[in-house]
Image 1 (cartoon, helix red, strand yellow):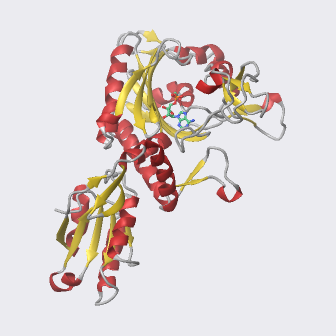
Image 2: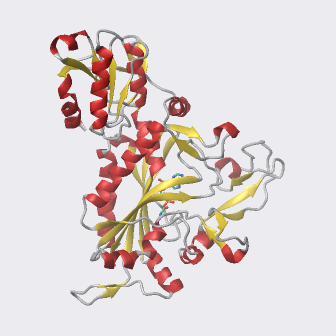
Length: 446
Ligand code: GAP
C-alpha cells in the first residue's frame, strides 16, 4: 500500500476554474474558435475529451439498447419538417421571457434573481428594464437557396421528436410490441439566453434520450421503473450517491408536454442543478403528430385487438452534462508525502487512457521493452500512452490529471525477472506483474 492520501478541502468557486484549466491543459475541452477570441458557449473536445465522451455514450447505448430486448436505436436527422415543431409545441411554447436593460442594452432572462429585483447584472443600473418579451430558443436557418419564410427550418432542440415521427417505422420494422422504447444519441441546439458554467448549459450540445411507449394506465408504473433505473445507472458509472437526488417539478414548472417530471440533480461546485430529466409525456406528442400530419400513430395490439395512442415515458440526459458531472465527481486534490497532486478518479471503464507505460531510465534496453509493451496494449485496443520524458514523479502526476488508472514502469528488475511495476492511481499501491501478463491484468480490471 502507498501512503494515505490526504484530501484537500477546496473552495467550491475555485473548483470550476481549476477544472476548466485542467481540461485545456490535458486536452479534454477547449473553447470553440479560441484563436478568434472564442464563440459564446460552444466547446470543442480534445484527444482525451472525445475518448471520455465516447466511453460515456457507449455505456449509455449498451445499457439502453444492447442489454435490452425492448429498446431499439435510431439516428434521426437534425433538420426536420418545420411542421414537426408546430405540432410538438416548440414554435409556440419553447420560449423564455426576456428583458432588455435600457442602459447597456444587454438581454436577460426575466426570471434571473437580480433581474427580478430590477438590477442589471452587467452594468448594475436599476429599473431600466423593458417589458418582458417571449424569446424562442430554437435556432432558425433556411433549407435550399432561397432565404424566405417558406424555407425556414429549425435546428432540433431535442432528439425526442425524431423518435415520435418514426414511432411506427421502428415498431413495425423491429416487430416490437408496446411497451418498447426508441433510443437516440445526437446533437441538439438551443439559443440559450443565459448559457454558462462551462459545459453545463451550452448552445450546441448532445443528448442521450430514450422514449418508452406504453399502454395508457401503465404509465405511472413505468415512470417509477425508469426513475429508479436511471438513478442506478449514474451510481454504477461511479458517481457518488450522496451527490445525486431527485427533484419533482411543481405544476407551474412542468414543460408543456409533461404530466409528471422529475430531475435527477447533481451537486455541482456551483450548487444542486439538473443532470437528467425523466418525463411522463402522456400521448401529447404522438396525438399532436397525428393531428398535424393526418397520419395515424396508433398502436394495434394484435392479441387483444385494442387500439391506442401510447403514452411516452422519456429519459433525457445531456452527454456534455454527464461529462461535466463525471469530471466534477472525479476531481480531487490531495497531499501525498507532503506534495500536492491533482487526480481525476475516473472509473476505469470511462478513463480515456487505461494505461501509461514508462521506462524508468532511457538506457539498459528499458525504452525498447516499454515501447513493445505499449505497442502490444495498443494492438489489443487498450488505449495506452508511452512517456519517457521527465522524472517518474512528473510522469505519474500527468497521468493522475488525465485520470489514467494504471501506470506501468519498466525498471532494472525487468531485465532480471521480466516483471514490471503497476501503480494504482487511487490507492498508489504498486505491484509487480510479469510484463507479458500486463494485458490480461488490465483486461480483468476494465
Ligand atoms: N426531450 C426532453 C428534453 O430535451 P430537457 O430537460 O430540456 O428535456 C434534457 O433536456 C437534458 O438535456 C437535460 O437534463 C440536460 O442534461 C441536457 N440539456 C438541456 N439543455 C442543455 C444545454 N443548453 N446545454 C447542455 N445540456 C443541456
